[in-house]
Image 1 (cartoon, helix red, strand yellow):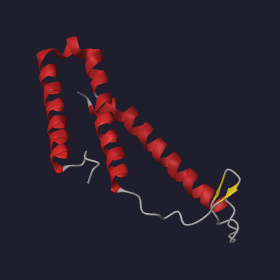
Image 2 (spheres, rainbow, N blue to C red):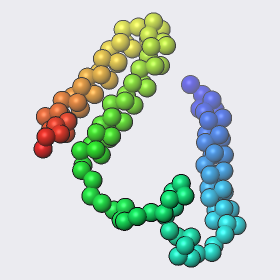
Image 3 (cartoon, rainbow, N blue to C red):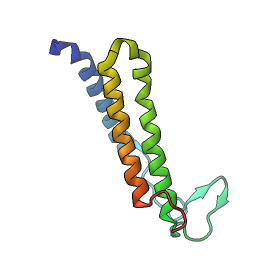
Length: 120
């Protein structure tokens, strides 16, 4: 395949990255810089904050969220296969089986490590 076919993707990526960098720099330079105790306070929905937000939270909640994202994102990769499963043939089927196998191995690993047990 000719490498010039990738030129539009590379240009679009460079423009997008350049735009993000430009906006971040310009807003930092042109934005207001007034700092005060009242402006630096946390404020949510018109309710003044109470207490410290840095309370310890059980790691179980974070592990559940991370594992959900990990195993939920894998479903996204099934869509292209579902759209093209006839065109991909047996090679595509074997690739999907390997993909699912890797995630099943990860799931078994997480299960054996006890990350799914909430009683601990």
